Image (cartoon, rainbow, N blue to C red; front, side):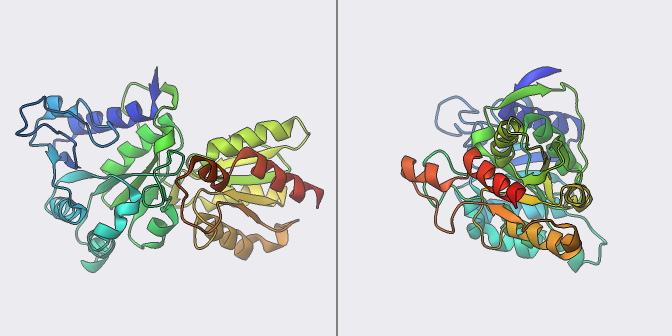
Length: 335
């Protein structure tokens, strides 16, 4: 067991899976770098330096640089998976899904269904998401809800280094296409992570905190925002259960239902906007199944339905914070 960053945990999972299975390959922009330029190979390790060091261990046959064309290399990754490899394709920003939407949504997601389950498509798409770095509206979205809406995709949203490593190993070994969403503000987060390989099953939520007053469901970086609120509320005598779903497809509704039945109150914290996102989806599922158990209306804590601002002061106002979560929880308890 060693202290590892979120970035290092993902890199370690990639390395261990590539050692375990020679069919695992990496494909994406700047994963190797330096080709034909006279400089050092592995100059970048991907746009977020996650794959740095893997080229020297596995070579250019398994760490593949691509042109700046998401449509081209995502199509190549889908074809490689259909042909028997286990590609891990890196989509630099989740915002770029529009450029390769046909390859992922109409080809990868529907492949097994189209062929009646007779074939598999073991593709993992790693992508980054989230605001907080003043990257502007075209590079800062959280599109987990969009990915979740596409039947045939599994969707993973790890919030810790431990979860990131174990869930990525599970994703790479899965025979279905998986969208693996990494929040960029989590890359430097550090915690104890096992050195050896391990997997975490999809569809099993993590209970971060337990309490009997309010259930809070939070995704990705919002787990840490909600945890800050939960700890502060405890000093006020308000005790919350905080649930991190870890995957949205499959979604562990049993854990959410059990907690809501006990507390009668639900708050969902999501960095995506309020319309048609995971906060709305989870709220609808709970309202349909557990309406009689609710003691207060379900509340969502999300950004407003506007593009992500680039100005630091506006971006800070845009993002949910612990104070907003605390205010909503207090209101529910008082009701």
